[in-house]
Image (cartoon, rainbow, N blue to C red):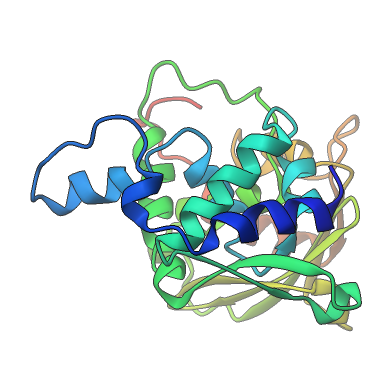
Length: 242
């Protein structure tokens, strides 16, 4: 579906009240957990929010990141999230004014919630680490799985190049932050590049040594510094394996 057609479809629902967009039977529970599930608990909703965490994106960009999601369902979820005040639609300067979708300030507050979900899921015995990751989900996983107590005095700029997407990471003693548009990072301390987000997993999440033959992850920068950075994400020996 063309972006303009989707924008028109979403616009038709934008004036609808949240009552009219309810999905199924609501819980009828005053707990904030119940309300959160009402607002973002529909299938695909949280993954759409995840894909918007690092900045606004066009409809077709979200669809490309979530290929199993139909255009119809994506249009419906964006409309519902927009009515709920979680997503906003606007014109994107980087796309010559084409319509895009981003998170509102309130929607952005879901970031630590998603990070907590990533950490919580590590203990699941049915977690399948072989499933594909999107570039944004990789960045979310890096922030969530970082061990702050291991940072010490490290102060780094890190470039992440994943296919055509670029991200800039800023590591300080307080943690790791990720910023879109890493192509503007002229002289990072480290640069990691791969054709897909999944190519990062063996080194960052499974303990494979950096630079081993056969790995698809390329690293530029001091090898010892790169190893120190990768070690920030290693699991403890007594933790459930990924």
